[in-house]
Length: 163
Length: 423
Image (cartoon, rainbow over all chains, first blue to last red):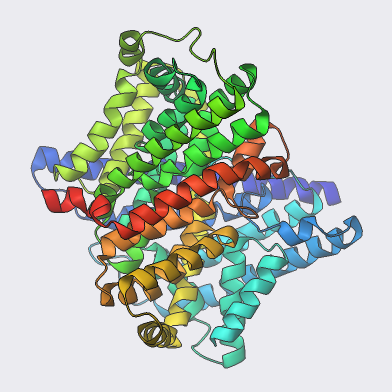
């Protein structure tokens, strides 16, 4: 039962990570298209910029779960490294609770914010602003399994590319 | 409000809560204790901090860096640099600096530079008898150039948070970057002679012409990026997208070192680092909003005006402050919180905001190689396969070198502004 749930969590995180990678490709295509259309038509399509911004924001929040899962979110570990092993387990849980609390706040107030702007529409696109703000509560909610997995089935941090 | 924010932030940092969450939760605690503004501002400010076209350059430059690391570009740049400077005593160490300098003109990140170049040069230096901690130190210090020579992610972050031109900042980073590269080459030359290392570094290197021909497509990229931005052909964000597409084409069709099948992994890795950095940027935007709402910038401004009588003493204060901050705080977060407070004061003292941005970035780049939180150190230690503490002793040499150059860049604005004002 426990393994089945953890396995489902892993699949969900992999799915959101792949979706985020796909959105990265879409955003790249859009901005590249903007350059190309300006060369070909002398005038770039203005909507590409608006859509690219929205796509990148969705990408950032969709990949959050994988970021927590794969320990790619940079922490400051000076003090913690100096503590004994027994304390380390407790701190691990405290950190996980802090992260979950923050994600919970993002889900709750992010939903509230998204609903409050449902009547405003995005310039040039004629869709509701809610679609943009929704990235925050949706991404934060989908990140929760990633945080739990990192606590229950930790992987070692990898520092490939940051900054 | 500010006391609560700072106390909470230090508390979460000490607990080793991830940086983005620490900053976000500290803001939440601040709002919760003081009761204003409404909590709705949390998602709202995170969103608006990220909803910016210049900031879109960040994911694309990270992606371009990933594509180039896997696409065979970094190895060809190493061969090229080695053919130029590899023949001297300490030639491999000098190659490390020069390769990082060229790679920095393609990538906007220091950590990416450490991985891309260190994976080749740290083992090479070890094979030529360099002590591993020293090789790691040289790599970590050289990789700093990644954020100083354009394109640069921290410069984009500074420009966005202070309404300065990204293009002008990039231009201003060129000479200081070259200066630091020259300083580091001089440093490793002396260091190797003192230690009697690297006498046979020049073995089996390529001729200059062969190496240049092989690295041609890689060397063309900085020309396209910088030429495109300054020729007014595209914006920095568009340049970032163009360089990612270019790196994709070079890796897939010219060097043929990546296949279509490698792309999902490369894109996934790029989104992961983008996500980590952009969440920090979003959270820092919220934090910074609360700080400015509390009126702190005006208080600090008033205090600075009473405390410092000239630009020189103020800049000295900034140097020291950022040196300490850089030891503990992630670069982009430090810029987002401090730049909006410090820049208006600097302008009040007659410092050009573009020059000030270069000072901040160089200053914080030094923080990437100062313990305890020096991201380049972690990356270099990881590549070298040694615990990070073993590098601390040899760090003194590059830290002092870069510190001396930082002072030069701080007090001689012409180094940063010469290229801009010359045109």
